[in-house]
Every structure is written in structure tokens, then in C-alpha cells.
Amino acid sequence: MGPFADDLLHNKAVLITGGATGLGRAMGEMFLKLGARLAIASRREEALKQAAQQMSSENNVVFYKSCDVRDPAQVLDLIQAVEQHFGKIDVLVNNAAGNFISPTEKLSPRAVDAVLNIVLHGTFYTTLEVGKRWIDNGQRGVMLNIVTSYASSGSGSGFVVPSAAAKAGVLALTRSLAVEWAKYGIRQVAIAPGPFPTEGAWSRLSPTPELEQRMIERIPLRRTGNQEELAHLAAYLISDYASYINGEVVTIDGGEWLQGAGQFNDLLEVTPQQWESLSAMTRNGK
Ligand code: HXC
Ligand code: NAP
Image 1 (cartoon, rainbow, N blue to C red):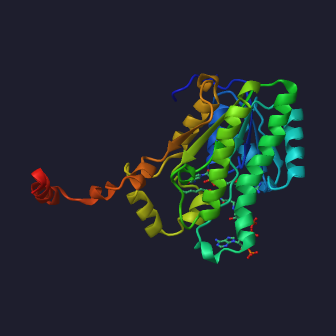
Image 2 (image 1 turned 90 degrees about the vertical axis):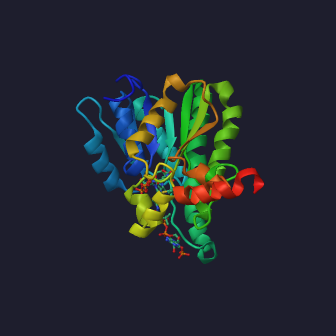
Image 3 (image 1 turned 30 degrees about the horizontal axis):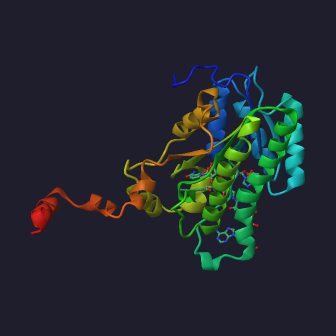
């Protein structure tokens, strides 16, 4: 049982980059449950094949094709293949990403490129290839970009600087095209997740239990997200029920971002006893 009717995404053809693992896979599974037809793409053919087999049912076979989104020629092949297979693409989910923690001064130019090319250039290439076709064919569609909570204006993050810069670029792409392409019936939306334990993210960003614990302590809800929570949000945003949402980014992070933003948020650590003496001290400025 979930919040949606079983046919919420009936017959919508959805392409998810990075759809064999982690959040991409969780979204794909949810979309299939809600009646969508699904294509997944990423670099590792074996991972795609296995995921597609596990996700497919008798009446709904998942299409997969290996593609490195950093390469425009491979992106063109992918989009052509998906369009040929389903006859159309209704929804593009730009979910493929690369990221790791590192002091910025330790990064080589190749390390910077590795992240920027996947996240910013890759998202741009798929967006362009799909967008041009929708415009030429007079077809409506939705693009959902998975960014991060540290990509929003007024935010950012040390130690993941290529990712922060690239995801901020993707957010700018989302908001800019929301204006430019709305006249073609193309909607742009984004999700900014806080921490969601996935093998891909945890191995590169939270590799020790201590780091994970510190991460959880920064989240007002005191837990990480679960993948179904994000998949439900994604299903709503790509559905026709969200048809007036354009250019918006929805943060799903248990309040983590806001806690970091507030000057006095560290007062969460003050005990009730300490509050008693603090409030006595601060009353009437005494
Ligand atoms: C410093 C590193 C590094 C690290 C790689 N490099 N890992 N530098 N610290 N941990 C450097 C390498 O030394 C090399 O530079 C350059 O980066 C390219 O490395 P390759 O391994 O050749 O790159 P490639 O095979 O293209 O792999 C890309 C990748 C990798 C990004 C480096 O991690 C990857 O495939 N990631 C995909 C999945 C992923 O990252 N998922 C997490 C998404 S989570 P030199 O100069 O030595 O040649 C997310 C948001 C999380 O995005 C937010 C959490 C709250
Ligand atoms: P993940 O499982 O590592 O997902 C990344 C996916 O991208 C993988 O399937 C990977 O597959 C694919 N990919 C990487 N490079 C690619 C390339 N060059 N071409 C095509 N595909 C490529 O990690 P995740 O946690 O699920 O992340 C999914 C999305 O959520 C990402 O956009 C990430 O930035 C975002 N996010 C995650 C978190 C979190 O806490 N988990 C938080 C904020 C944002 P291959 O290796 O087979 O190519």
C-alpha cells in the first residue's frame, strides 16, 4: 500500500540514468509499481543487466543500455535506442553522478573533471538530446534532476567541492530551462536529497561508522532518509498531478540543511538544566 493509485504513471516511458543502483533503482522500482515503462542506463553493462532482470515482470520488461553520459555520442545512441524501443520518452531522470570526499587542495584536474563531467556535462547532454526531440516532435515531457541539499543558493559544502559546483550548475540548468522550455510543455523539477545510505554514496562519502554518526547528529530528525521516501516524492513530481510545478527543487533531508543555516541552531545541544540558568541570565537583559 502506498499513497498513490496503481496507475499514477500508467504507460509513461521513463529513462533513469544511473538506474541500476541506489536511489535510481529505488525510483525505477517505484515507477514500475505505478504503471510506468522503464529504461535504465549507466556505464556497467553487467550491473544494468542484472538490475533489469530483477526489476522486470512478465508484462513489463525493463530496457537497459550501457552509456557513459560524459560522451555525447553515447548519449545520442542511448536516446535513439530508448525512443525506438518505447516509441517515445515521457520522462527523463538525470540521476547519474560521481562524488567523493577529499580536501580540495588534494584534487588533481582529472579528479575535478571526473565529477564535473558526469554531473554537469552528462546532465546537460541528456537534457539537450531529449529536449531537442521533444521540441521538434511537439511532445510534452518532464525532466527530473537529482541534485543535493548543498547545491541550493546560499549553500555549498567543503570537501565535496566539485560535486557542489556541478550540482549547483544542474540546479541553474533546471531553473533556467523551466522558463525557456515551458512554452513547449516541458517541465523541469529537481530533488535535493540529504543523506540516504546507498552503497555508492556511503563508500565514497561516509566510509566509517564515526562519520555516519556525525552525519546523523546533524539531522534534526536524527536519522538518514529511506529510499522509498525519496521514490514517492519523485513519483509525484513526474506525475500529471504535479503539472503546475515547474523549476522547483524539493529538499528531502530531515531538516539538515535548515539546521546548518541557522545561526543559533547549535543551541539544540543545550540541556534543560542549562536552559534554566540561561533563561534566568537573559530575562530583561539581566
Ligand atoms: C581523490 C580521487 C578519488 C578520491 C578518484 N580520484 N577518487 N581523488 N580522492 N576519493 C581521482 C583519481 O585519482 C583520478 O585522478 C581521477 O579522480 C579520476 O579517477 P577514476 O577512478 O579514473 O575516475 P572514473 O573511473 O571516471 O570514476 C569517477 C569517480 C568514481 C567519480 C571518481 O568515484 C565513480 O565512478 N563514481 C560513481 C558513483 C558515485 O560517485 N556515487 C556517489 C554519488 S553520491 P588522477 O589525476 O590520479 O588520474 C552524491 C551525493 C551525496 O553525489 C551526498 C551525500 C549527503
Ligand atoms: P550511486 O548508486 O553510486 O548512483 C550513481 C549512479 O550513477 C550509478 O548507478 C552509476 O553507475 C551511475 N554513473 C556514474 N557515472 C556515470 C557515467 N559517467 N555515465 C552513466 N552513469 C554513471 O549513488 P546514489 O546515492 O544512488 O546517488 C544517486 C543520485 O542521488 C546522484 O545524483 C547523487 O548525487 C544523488 N544524491 C545522493 C545522496 C545520498 O545520500 N545517497 C545525497 C544527495 C544526492 P555506473 O557506475 O554503472 O556508471
